[in-house]
Length: 310
Image 1 (cartoon, rainbow, N blue to C red):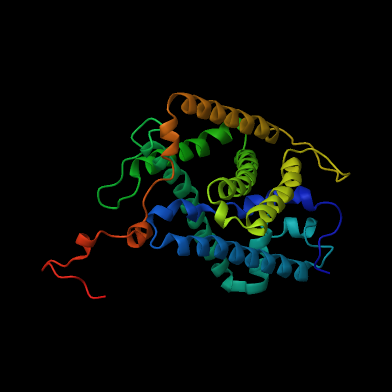
Image 2: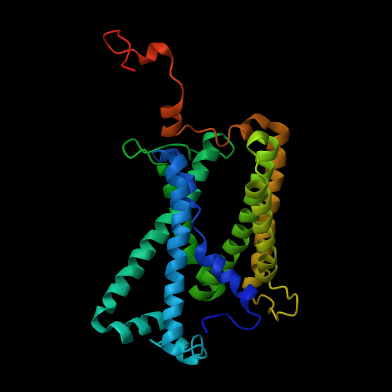
């Protein structure tokens, strides 16, 4: 049976969340996309469906090859010299396994691209609203991309990749710490997004409020993520046998807490000193806004001064 057994589902959810992180990244490109109200939802939902189908296919194939009891065991772990997926691909496909390597390299390139795009666009928007210092609101004169933000975050990423393994003793520990921190933060972001959807439609668009879409679904989302977040913290509950976070992963909750505290303190400072700056967030104009905005009658006239055909 291709079914999870035992009590390890919630502890494993931290890896599931880490694997799925990034599906929401296309939302940050709405200002640069054509017709974002239709293309962005398709990109978000489509990426979830495609990634989910790919994961199911891979795990089903491994379960069939090794058997329900062998998949995830020592035979699988040691296959390919510690690269079980690559080893499995070589055993099954032979020389065509190069296609699997090409897929991995393509996925890594896409991963880097998807990791840089969201934070640079967010940093650009914050700088444009004068919420963060620095020239991060500058765009490239030719490509019209937030070049300063991209170069800055790229340099920070390279520095982390070089320095963190030296401090922690190995690249694997550095990756594990960053992955745990990212997972904890994104779980909070996802829960906050669910809550903000309900509050936004209840406060700002009461006429469009639909109980199932804007209340029940967000509450279900929050309810699903609460035990996942507890498990990601290494806290055992319901007799699941969740092990505490070992060092350096035990640093992750403190890093997340410190980051949230800094954000809350800065928000309180801005709300007290510059509340108008906060209200400018998310006020960028997209191409769809321009196309759908009612135009003055004078702007609809042609160069010859005649009315356009109706």
